[in-house]
Length: 227
Image (tube, rainbow, N blue to C red; front, side, top):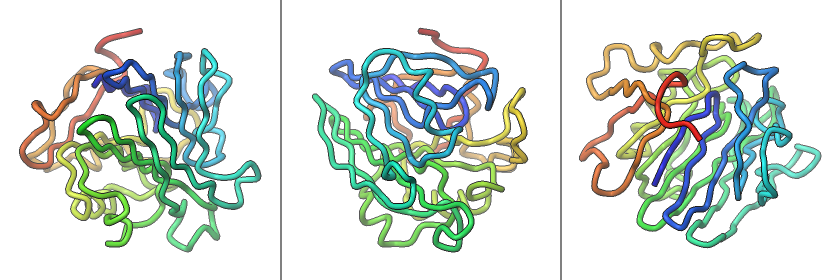
């Protein structure tokens, strides 16, 4: 399976049957790194402008939203499209049950023998009950920048609870981002031995090349395969 990081909390991955799945699209008002891509399925973890920018998505994708149109309540998702199955888990955008920033959604993607989880703008450390709903995890996409989401320390707590084989950090400060007082990825990776800075934006992931124990793979916006 191809996994491409587009910046912020946005990933584009392609299933073995060719389904192009886009998470949390953002636009140029967030960062000049924003790209227009074509997708078959789009997931939106919550209704904030840096996660629901559908204007930049080409094609006629299925759009699966974690929150209802008014953004006030969760929208349960349990959908299958070709070799992709997606379900949602309700969580919050802050540590006080949404009083500051509202609700958020975790999306779990089952693609063949792989299970991925995208945490959106998770604002609190997860509990055992969340881990049970997510299940055994191969790939975790976790926010690490703090301020609007969990910070580096809390992200490591989540990693320790979920025990994925592979971690892709997201939602951290990258060059050109406009008005985001969040930390760089170094806050998350500094002093850790299980980190690989790949220098590419896209990688091939399958059961055969997953690390035996949890590793962090930091993708780059300035390299790798382009569409």
